[in-house]
Amino acid sequence: MAMTLVSCALLVPGFPAAHVAEIGSKRNSAFKLLSKLRTRQGRRKLGRFFAEGETFLRMRPRGVFVRKSRWKQEGLAQIRQQVLEGAEAPEAPAARPLFWGGGVPEDDGAAARQASYAVLENELFDQISTQEKSQGVLCVFGMPLDTAVSKVTSSNVVVLDGVEDPNNLGVILRTMEAFGSRTLLVTKGTVDVFNPKVVRCSMGAAVRGRVDVAEVLASELRPMLRGYRLFSTRLDGSLPSTRLQERLTGRDAFLFGHEARGLSRELLDLADEHVRIPMSPHVDSLNVGVAVGVLLHSTLKG
Picture 1 (cartoon, rainbow, N blue to C red):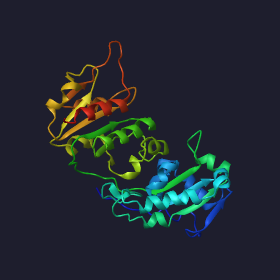
Picture 2: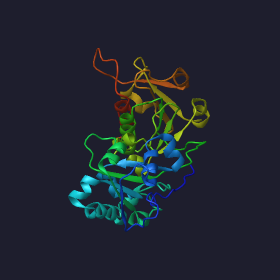
Picture 3: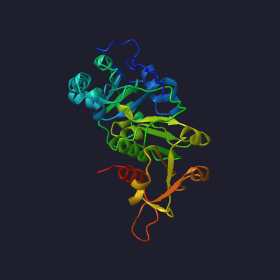
Picture 4: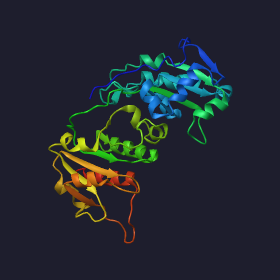
């Protein structure tokens, strides 16, 4: 899967890394760019996405925006220190060798050491923030521009069909990373993986890049997954998840659908087997993020 690195260090045009820009107007060019990152189209066009919270300061951001109230309270020294520690940390490049915006082997931390900083007026920051109780920090990262994929080679592929809740997708990314599932295929209608709420709920999985993500058409799945055994989840599935191990081939894909509607008929028809997750009587649904976790955990040996 070809990836492209896009630098985000110059979100504040004309200001070197050592300078702190103060932004108080909606007309400011950096604020306009940041605003565009709230939409899928803007993120794709600019090749950038943002994540909110201190967790992401150590993940080698290219740009950092700080709420003015926090800046007045403690300045930027502590924030800069966390960014620099992330840039120098030997554990930071533990992700897969892809040209992502942070935490990869090709990124030696130089970009994070030169990250730009800007202070946003409180009302401007709040227009961008997606959290009710924000920590007052927004981190900007580069993103892969080319997510085209024609062939899949990893095991335990996850396919999402129209999953709309960003919290669910964030949990799924985090779960996939935890259980070593390295490929996520999403069909049209699935929430953007770089949606700020997805990134936050993924606890950094969307930034680290250990999970390859590609958008695909439903009609492309079968040729793309040739040689794979495809499992769907259904209430009336004939294979209980407790026996999933017996049916795995080492080249397996798991299909999950919309939170309310489930899988489309097109994807249901692609499945080789339908898995049933045993539940208490009179319970007829399970959160899709939980379902992904149950099946991926069931693939583990020992």
